[in-house]
Image (cartoon, rainbow, N blue to C red; front, side, top):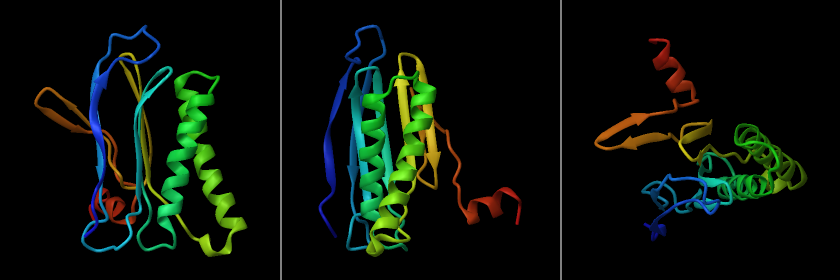
Amino acid sequence: MSTPKASPARSGSPKNKRSATRLSYAGVTEAGRVRSINQDSYFVGEMETGYVAVVADGMGGHKTGEVASQKAVETIRQELSEASSHPPGALAKAVQAANLEIFDYASLHTEHQGMGTTLTTVFIDDQVGLVGHVGDSRAYLIRNNDIRQLTFDHSWVAEQVRQGV
């Protein structure tokens, strides 16, 4: 088993100084028991306009999922840091840009054809949280002693369960 990648727990207010929101955040990932390569990537931290958390889990049954997950996280961070639109539009554009970056990269590099990743990202601007989600990496809201699932898996199995099969 590999050593988990971790970032220290931190807290604070966004750099824009207009928000009273304070969050505590941390991140950790590991390859797990099945795979020898950790295909997870993440970022959690502050940006100019708020907080951002991004989790991408490379699709284990596909080639080079770790490359896809890294590209997804890097693209989301870059797009949000350069965004000129308001957070809802910026987040949607960032997710679309990550998808296009992964697709284009795989198209140009045959050894990466078929690579893929899940993606769940949360952008918090003052008291508003926006979620972008593709796949089966879930987002939860944890407040006080309550945990609430915010996203639902985009998978064949989850769809079958929702349909009562």
